[in-house]
Image 1 (cartoon, each protein chain N blue to C red):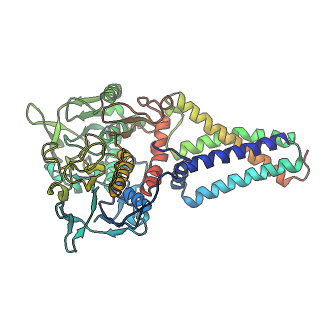
Image 2: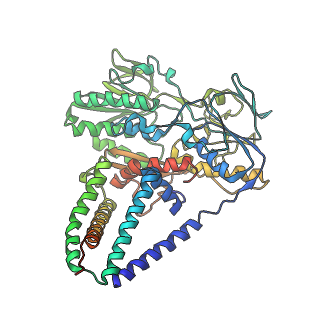
Amino acid sequence: MNMNRRALLGLLAAGGVASVAASGTQAAQTVNTSAKIVILGAGAAGMALANRLNTRLNGADITIIDGRPRHLYQPGFTLIAAGLKPADYSVSSNDTWLPRGVNFINAFASEIDPESKLLRIAGQEDVAYDYLIVAPGLKLDWDKIEGFSLDMVGENGIGAVYAGPEYAAKTWTAMDKFTDEGGVALFTRPATGMKCAGAPLKYTFLTDDYARRKGNRGKVEMTYAAHNNGLFGVPIVNEKVRMLFEDRGVDVHHNHVMKAIDPVKKLATFETPEGDTELPYDFTNVIPPQRAPDVILNSALPWADKWVGQGWVEVDQYTLRHNRYPEIFACGDVAGVPKGKTAASVKWQVPVVEEQLIAQIQGQESDARYNGYTSCPLITKIGRAMLVEFDYNNNLVPSFPGVIAPLEELWISWLMKEVALKATYNAMLRGRA
Amino acid sequence: MKELTLSTLFAVFEEIFGKGLFWAMVAVAALVTVGYIYVLVRDRAVSWKKFLLAQMAMPFGAVGAVVFVQHMTHSSLSDLGGPVDVIVLAMIAIVGAIGAAILVYTVQGLFSRRAV
């Protein structure tokens, strides 16, 4: 009988905690408005904002514009390229996430006219807006790697994890073969702003791990060509990665930026301060320069004096509001802020854009700020990762201080990447996380 | 993790298992718990005989839970990298052990007529 009473008390206590926690989430109030809001891009940022604004705003006319036929969970590409998940792990239909009541135009915008507040779409009527959120992601500029084309991926030791889930799967075919046979593995990163600067490092670690698991590490030479003097933008993380590369036996070439590839001779050409130089490879993961999509690059929205030629949108780095067009916000990869081209950044940026926009609609001010938060579960082998989180000031900002050490290779961080990350991402798309 | 509330957790678990499976699992866990409480109330005492068998199921539950998690996440014991990993492993094992014990006790209680 005692145990029974204790169990019942436990249940009651659990119920109490649940009701307290649930009541804490009902803070946001619905706002009435007839504003026309256009979201350019149905990726992580666009889709999450469509859902959140649709919930928060009553009567708003919300339109989301994107020509891509499907939604891609990009953080999954690394796992696909490591043979741990199939290509369709990252693929879903836009319809899965689109909220009811939001107009979806499945086409690419060709021009933004911020003066007359219009978007042009080829072959369709112009779309007018009161408020515009630009979240079209970025463009991988494959043409900037001379001699490379995407149809080479998967053959002759050429990989391209960033190119999409199918290409990530082909990259796995090439990496699997390479770690069977041995040779020189060459890893690079571009000198432009890029999606998840940790991803090139992760793939280096994963290739090393596979070579070791297969007992072929002795036949493999690992080379990492960094675009500058470091390996990672955050000094304390950079130092840790340097130590890990030393431990794993990865040779580093600094100030090397890939510009061309010769798939016949298996040579890659790099720009360096001393002039062009070549490095050999038997396996490589090509990562091209990255920039804003043409519709942004050719508009009046980018910074004129920063990231010249890359086209990132000129926004205040804390409010994500455009500096010259206050009714425009940028979110996700395309935002011209010093950090944060990751899904984790999007998760932090989305509530800021939401609060800022809603306050603006109400004629109020919001104190919501984006602090540059970015997170990278930096995989160091299959089964271990470092949960690196940092902000604009290069400070580490661990979510679980004292529990999950950011600079330790841990199983729990791997579990998060493998199990919880996609689920959290999906919940974010629905506006629930 | 920002705003880690219970509703966020539910949203995340729904995405991990799918809405149907997650709530079905919650329902099964709740049913077993209710069954357990029912057996305790009905018998008005803990049956030490049943409890002994339930205890014997605990190591199997513990190992089963750990093997299941490792299989699902492509990892192994050699991936444990720090104290928190050992704690996580222990928690998974404990949950598996307690779950197995409650399940075995309840099944015995519901399907054996005499409560001694």
